Image (cartoon, rainbow, N blue to C red):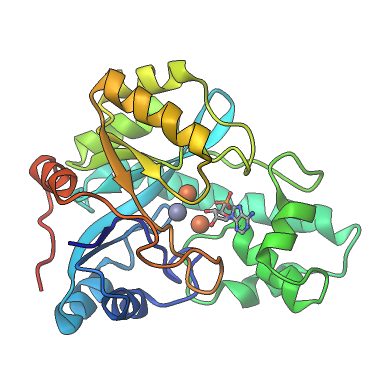
Length: 280
Ligand code: AMP
Ligand code: FE
Ligand code: FE
Ligand code: ZN
């Protein structure tokens, strides 16, 4: 069983439509894939239809933006009720805040580079969630940087001069909202220290107390040292351990199936979730 529990579509900052992500996952030989766009469930219907057509099982999810210890963190929510207000209210607030934040970042960038808000809108296509990758694509289209990676490294990184934070719920509140909505919360890439500062151990204890179900340990942004640290934390707190690609289409070099989750772990997630896995 090849199970990949973290992918993005054009609903957020991936480059393939939800149906295309499912087609690509089937073509990559996956048995199960999760669609986890940032702060939205808008791709779920198209993905479900495509999963049945391509004969692949689908775990419906969302990657929820949150904050802890002054750091931006991501919590994967699997199999929640997509209409439950506990989570939708937070996601609505975050998506709204992301628009003002993106505008503020473009204003800062425009002082030094030839980039406009319309450039970013043009790159966001059918996204309902605006993120730094769309600003990166606008910088690439203008020839200011060669690719998304360079845009982040030179201009968009969290500790850079053009970065503006956006509203996101506290991690413990996001975990509680995910659980209240019948979802299963898994901390996404918690040790991705190349992207910036990562949270200290005490944050894992607080999130576990709030109802966290698991940690995404097998992820390309984790060094061997971070994997060892996270595996030990998961054991200490009795958390599930997942692995995933964090596929963004051509927007990142991450390849579908490059990290996988054990079938027993998926079974535990499905047991705890409200929405059923879409079986092909
Ligand atoms: P935002 O949600 O607007 O803060 O942007 C974060 C998103 O940017 C992440 O979900 C990744 O998809 C993407 N990202 C972060 N770091 C990089 C990087 N170094 N290169 C390319 N994309 C990145
Ligand atoms: Fe992303
Ligand atoms: Fe993430
Ligand atoms: Zn992601």
